[in-house]
Image (cartoon, rainbow over all chains, first blue to last red; front, side):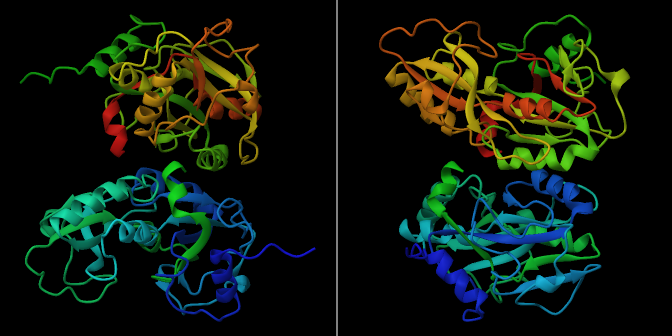
Length: 258
Length: 258
């Protein structure tokens, strides 16, 4: 009897677990859903889930594990979320500690893991539809407040892409097909209308002058719940490190009927 | 200074609150989202929300109120969920008590109210697309298990409609536009394939022989979480009484981009 061959997402997670892959998850296992991670004590889990529900386009919760359980039974039943992210961001009382590549030593029976859809998941579908995803893409803080669920609150974080008008129309249609993964844009045009802070992008590097003929298009971003959890200054909060998302076994196209 | 005129949903809720309307909410304030209610102690709220997340096509949570708060700030900011349903079903330790038309005397600071999308919301959109909704519609128990979140578990409850093949195709397209309100069908054809119990419909009356030329089409039903909460035999659980849903101020079409 031989074991079933690994699928691409399983192969990548094995290489991450063995330390063979340590970098970003962007471009890895394209076509599989990638998730942001939020891991926190059960004492705060209801309020965090409430926050995600109230801001669900920014915080599309795809799976929540039972307290103490590190296995995403629905999205990646052979995975362990304590070892299968390439890099973890760790916060104590709201202050970021040194990153880790394995959090087994921090694990506790009362920790609850949330898997939240990442915008990276879109990339394959956008590329297939002729919308480039490899440049002109930033994560920005806006001044639009989210709906709080105390102690979780904060401003909406957005992904900005610069697209041609035709690409903007196509990208709206493509992303609207993923209602459980941010869905269609929330804004297009003037960044100031939502207070998008072009001066201090969270990811994507400095924003250059925009070439003629492009339009800024904005999606709600899965960094939002992470930002709210940081604001809450929990005794312990663990997330994936930026751009090091958790890779699931779910084909992105399946999210359309999730 | 005069008060703003009431919109249709507000008028209906006022008449319910005043005891002028005591019957079903089906057909009332058509075009506004209707919600199933689930009200339970905070001690069980995280697990119930987990259950809804794991079975979200059956349990589309549209709003969750803070513990002790009876006002749905997002969906109906002028409403009070303790008085604005025409009839409430009350369960103690899993046993149904006498129905009530007002639950203010049962209210406690630790009660959490969940508003869950109801299939009734579809009816206006289906009718506009030429799919009749006034007959051949039943709520049935299936043998398909839901994903548990202890103490919440149970079989999937489904809505069955008998449609022509052409209506089935149109209804699939129309309901797919409401991903946050059950979405498209989960099955069509042989009821036995999902163990749908035609002998004991939960609502809709006895199932007659099916006329030639029709096909059974099945949607996940918002009675599912209520059934799971009954199974959990909580000390106290309050729901809307069947077919007496809570009427919100949200136009159904808005749910497409919810």
